[in-house]
Amino acid sequence: MSFRPFQSFTRTPLALPLTFVALVIASQTAFAHSEPVSMTPAANAAVVAPANVVIHFSEELEPKFSSMTLADTGGKTVSKQPSVVSKDAKTMTLPLPALKPGIYTVKWVSVAADDAHRLEGNYKFTVK
Image (tube, rainbow, N blue to C red; front, side):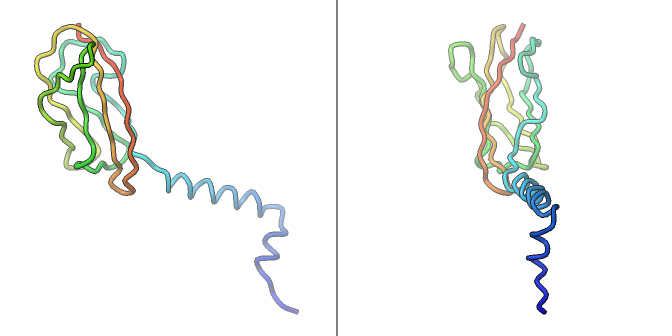
């Protein structure tokens, strides 16, 4: 009589659910992205002209490939200086010139430091 642990496992009622759980956990780890966690000014906020736009990300960024810009209502880029990634690599800051009242669009690109996955997005805020 030979001992076959794999065959014994696959015949148990828990084999399929346990395999599914393991795959879900593995895929979440493998497909983690550096996504925005919080933004200042917040999306759709009406604010007094800010000095900076700051986005905190869920994971560390690759500074060379992550960036942020600010455009006015007409789509013209108004940010003069490049964005900067913090030393902890989870925060990106964009220094801003004096902004006139209007609607502005923040455009961001994040590249995760651990797996180089690239995400991009945008959001709007209003300067009163």
